[in-house]
Length: 188
Image 1: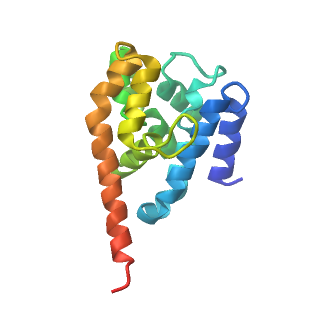
Image 2: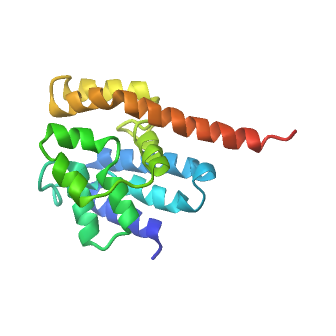
């Protein structure tokens, strides 16, 4: 079984029944990851696997700390998943800032190294341009939706507001890379 086949099967088994909306979101994030293949090269499959797995820590079967990036990454590591996928899941969408809000930053950083910046950016882009219903959106609309859903004074609300500048910057970097590839592929 290939990496992506395994990742989709695992994510579906953990999310589709207990959290169908989270499953649909994960499918949308993976679809966005596939669209980034022109800028990812040999890492395209890796990013798609991380994208479909990024929220598995929400699964009631896996929730230990209540911090889904950490719970998901620990589970994946225990399953023998590719370490780069594990690191992307652990650090997706500025997770270190939410970990700080939860008093888990040291745990997250000591257990899981950051993946290459361009892959971290790509996963941020995919997650933060996909609605909870799996539909494409803009980073600013997604950030607003998260704040409204959780409330501005909750852990998630505070963290996402702090993370907003970096999320937008990551999205801008990815869009810039896509634009360069598109312009390079234009006939002269």
